[in-house]
Image: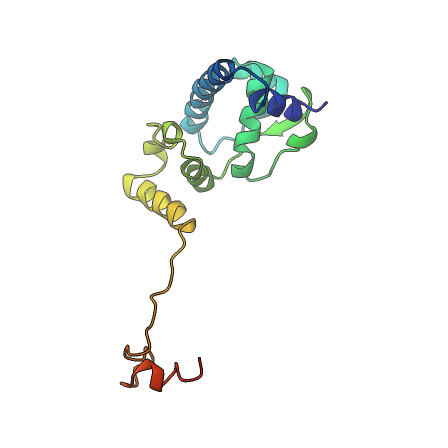
Length: 168
């Protein structure tokens, strides 16, 4: 069984004790935060290695590194082969800074997008703009309803029902 499937079976188990899952995720989020803090100190450096080497480098167990690779994969410049990766699979952590920030916002991971390391990468205005861009990309905006007796939006001065709305 590929490592990713083992991770997902463990982390998203339907049969596991809820307390055990909460502890697993609590520990995972702490380790994830520590890894991102290290990566964001040198955001332009592309970290490479096997899954096992990276787990050792960041002092985490193999499954935690697999979960991390699963989480960061959509923010990478070149995606890793996470579906079939094993301990000796060569992976890269070369991430797109803006995409990573927006993906953290989309995931609701405030403990990650509020890391102080981001302040060295983007100024406050840029972080706010990226946050707003991500949030607005998932917001549905309904057009304003035009009623028959409203002025026609084409600017003719006629009522909508006597102008552009006549054939509706």
